[in-house]
Amino acid sequence: MAGVLVYVESDGERVAPISFELLAAARELAQSLGGDVEALVAAADTGPLVGELGAADTILEVTSPALAGYLPEAQQLVLVEAIRARKPAVVLVGYTSAGLDLAAGAATATGLPVVAYCTGLRAEGSDVVADSQLYGGKLVATTTTSTPAVFSVVAGSFAEANGHAGGRGERIVTAPPAGLAQLRSRVLGTTGAGGGAVDITKAERVVSVGRGIGGADNIELAEELATAMGAELGASRPVVDSGWLPKERQVGKSGMTVKPKLYLAVGISGAPEHLEGMHDAGLVIAINTDGDAPIFKVADYGTTCDLFDLLPAITALLKPAG
Ligand SMILES: Cc1cc2nc3c(=O)[nH]c(=O)nc-3n(C[C@H](O)[C@H](O)[C@H](O)COP(=O)(O)OP(=O)(O)OC[C@H]3O[C@@H](n4cnc5c(N)ncnc54)[C@H](O)[C@@H]3O)c2cc1C
Image 1 (cartoon, rainbow, N blue to C red):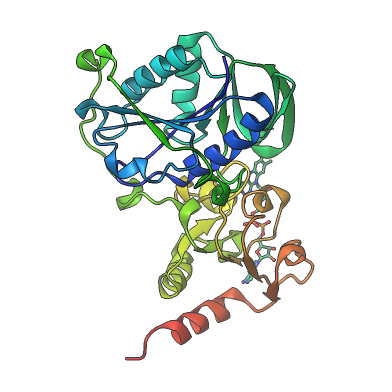
Image 2 (cartoon, helix red, strand yellow):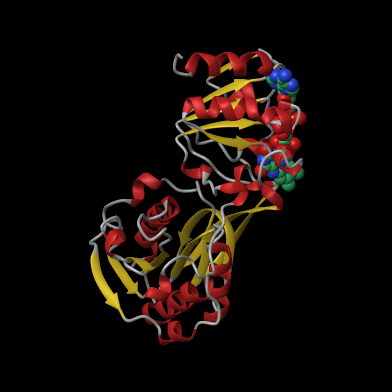
């Protein structure tokens, strides 16, 4: 029992950024716990993905038509079999919409403990100490778990840049589990929420709107600016709770963690729960009429202009003439 096994998420063509974060975390853990960093990649065609997994010492490839797209039952079969075969000390899965059921399901099937919502992991002897967000980030629980164990990790918790290289990159092609031939569920199709699924955690620029936007009808102002800037639209929790924007756009403790190069906070006060989701952003610019708003403590640039004056003006400047 040694090493760290990373479950690799992908869309079949590209490895998801969370997986690079997990590989970075795995390397840190493996340095203390010993053993290899192993990446498990399960897809209809692992070919396009393997080249991106240079941070792993061993790349375990499982290929089957049944692994096209994300089907929890199929992916869980593969992960469970890999855990049984490789006996890793630590299994890392992203706390993503795919990973949150996968981690729990695989842990249950293998009889391992699972620690969810991890934002920090470190080895102490043969144990792993994990920081987990609770109650939407109101509390951080620090737990010590003896290995082997499964941990699901919140996006944005580890440096993705450290998860691209540094491993031996040896490939091991593994036969798909027999159970893939008798799956009881199948994907009928996927529909993007609100007409198109977004992943704001990957965005290089985010225009985030807060309650200061005043209502659903005004979201358009921020949308136009985001389009002109080539940015994704983010939101504070009240905006999502009010139904002005979908949950997938929420930034913060109980939403997404984003790391854009540019974060424009529009009518957002800067509550700790919001800041938790964007503290790793590069340049932070705040628009807020209240000069005492806490967002200005983290902003590189800020203005107390009224957003209703400023947003259309910036959009007009950025829009191509004519
Ligand atoms: C368990 C828990 C989890 C939470 N998780 C999250 C989370 O994931 N994400 C999150 O965002 N929050 C979260 N919250 C809520 C958080 O505590 C704050 O309530 C929330 O972030 C406030 O959102 P806001 O900044 O949009 O609204 P407000 O705090 O109401 O701020 C609105 C701001 O807009 C400014 N404003 C008003 N009009 C204008 C104008 N015309 N022009 C410019 N500025 C204007 C105001 O000055 C004000 O600062 C959580 C809370 C709890 C208890």
